Image (cartoon, rainbow, N blue to C red; front, side, top):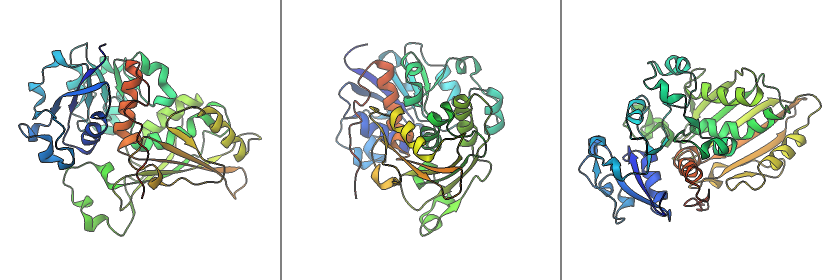
Length: 347
């Protein structure tokens, strides 16, 4: 691989596509050579996102117009259900980080159940690596195609997986109550996402049916070595960015909430993007805005035998585009934090 890698971003007109551009233009070893957006083909990026003007970006084109011979890495930010056949048809020399849900579930039957149609690239699925970077870093290193985790699963799994691996919490009766900013719903025009529908209120959605549930359960099942069923309820908040997962767990054996905190501190020591806060300190989404950080908090519950965990991320960065670039860095042997050194924006 040369000192500078050529990047294609498929689906550049969405929020995650824009975040990829914002971060990659400051990555010292990345060069954006192709941007696709079928409905916006022929337009410059600043026509869609004025804040990205003046960067010398290529004009947006259709996927069919991309010269793949000159591309080293592809970030796929296409809608769910449209990605499998596209990625399966890419040349073998192109490394891929897929930000959709199309390759996150290992079981094609589970994918068909939750997404309503058959998996269209089952052979490729067998070699795809799930890119929760801090947990699967070694597998990401050798991957050609990485499935970038969802935003809710990232904020929920990072606090839970080390504790399940060590048997400090029970795999049963895990409750995840999560809140997200409106950008998590994408950029397409939807009545439910209008300002007057979202502002000055909060509401649950996807109750007992959200598609991130099987992804979370898959990761927690891997960590615990058994099937896991979680109670997961997402809520929409009147803010642009951010996810906060409030997680309620049963302690295992003689474990205490302090033991959970100590285990997480040890597990994530030296990690560039995961910060475990002092015991009894709650993270806030405003403290990760615009950054690739995940903040984790641990509390003792007033209910005996239980503890409360919190995970806070920016859904567009650590929950999508930032983690995708983190995975690219690992895949290519670059410093993991390259291009992701931005501190959170506050206030």
